[in-house]
Image 1 (spheres, helix red, strand yellow):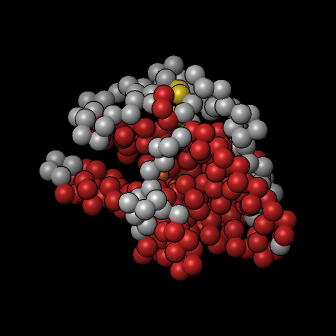
Image 2 (cartoon, rainbow, N blue to C red):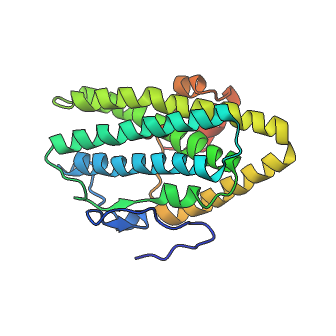
Image 3 (spheres, rainbow, N blue to C red):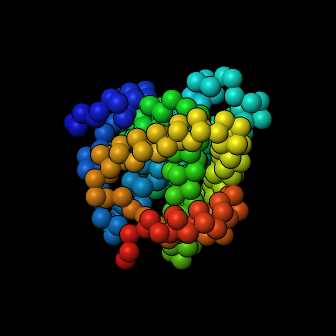
Length: 240
Ligand SMILES: [Fe+2]
Ligand SMILES: [Fe+2]
């Protein structure tokens, strides 16, 4: 097992003994996309990512009790959405004969996020970065799964999930903007520190295997990104 730098990574969240928890991407199952087990492993891994989403949002409520009520309500709604997503993914893989714990899982999102000590930093890294990238990935997955016979349950799952994830990115965009205007340079500094730490941590977890999906431009606009931000995200994609 890899030992991760405690400056960049907090402790793992609790998992019951059914789960085999790994630290970095190369320790995961890593099936090739054509492998018959690939879809099941993806759904199982994604369920655990949604658990991470719920756990991070819940920690945002307990770690920042002084945040504005409206922001806390938006975070609480996110907890509810992520809880539904967990069950949706579980239903889809159990239908395919896979059981909870069948494949290893990784809690890098929780470990990176709960090491960040500002709410503006967490909303920027989780919602505006990880979840915005998630929107691009879901958009691509919808197109792929709706083209495949027998996977209409997945097309429905992604469709329902997408609307929620757009909302998670959107409320973060609104509140990050407000915090920047209200707190000025302190907010900017917190934000920059969080992004830089998360980038370093992500490189340790993923190595060379960070996958980028085409930018879902309309959805990102709907989620409150400006044209410049969408362009900047596109510029970061590896050239294919
Ligand atoms: Fe989710
Ligand atoms: Fe989400």
